[in-house]
Structure formats: C-alpha cells, structure tokens
Image (cartoon, rainbow, N blue to C red; front, side, top):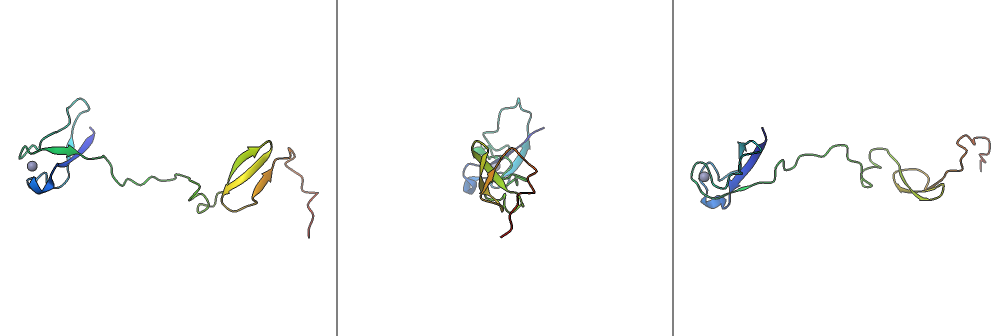
Length: 105
Ligand SMILES: [Zn+2]
C-alpha cells in the first residue's frame, strides 16, 4: 500500500499529530487527506520520498569521477570527448587493430 506524507498547512496551527509530517497508508483509490484525522485542521500532501538518493546516475559532471570517459559523436567516424580522462577526440578509422603504425616521439 502506498504511503503518503502529510503535514498541517500551517504547522503553527496544527496539533501534535499534524504539526510534523505524518505518514498515512492509503490505497490508490482513496481520496487524499485534506484535513488532519485528529484535529481536522487543513493538511497538505507532501512530495513523496524527499531526498531519496539517486544512485548510479551518470552525468557529464560525475562521469569522470567514476572513471568513465564519455564521447559524443560529432561527425562521421569522429568523436569529441565530453567528460573523463582520455584523448580529446577519437577517430574511428574502421580499423580497430592498427598497433603497428604507432610512432614514438
Ligand atoms: Zn492535527
């Protein structure tokens, strides 16, 4: 059963029960509470699950921290780095095993 969180519209006027956020189990068919079950003062529904951490979301901001490199395709066989460590551009020459043409400086 989903849990909804409510709090007095004006916590200063709420009773002990609704002054602080309280959770109510309701079926999806039930009407949301509009008044406190204790003092019948007006209550509002709070946004559910506040501060729930979103895990494993890769963004350009944290992708480098996680050791990933992100490229975006900016042309035919050409990739531009947007995040992470690595060469700024990648060229997809179509040959993935060109080890023998590596020049040392
Ligand atoms: Zn109340």
